[in-house]
Image 1 (cartoon, rainbow, N blue to C red):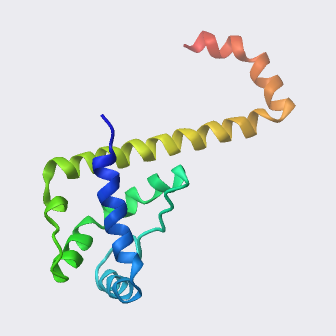
Image 2: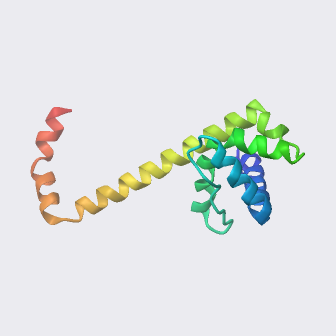
Length: 133
């Protein structure tokens, strides 16, 4: 099962808020009035796959504010109230954040293992580490 049913509306809503300068200013004013972690929605670029996931956490975190903003403009926000869709959004966000964490951890391990002295210590102590398991 794909998650296009989540990503497509997220991108569409995000782009509709950011596409018009007046709407974006109004949305930012709303966020300034509320205690939110994010002050704006990130720019989304369909071409870059990394960009797709980066918009999920801010969108999920600002879900109630986005819903309020859409309702104040007379737009349909029924999807944002759908429990199943919201759970899919939360799952996809959690999955994306986990993947990014693992990718970052793998990069850090590569940086550490780049140094020959670290590789030598790990190689020399491999049997001791295995004995602890």
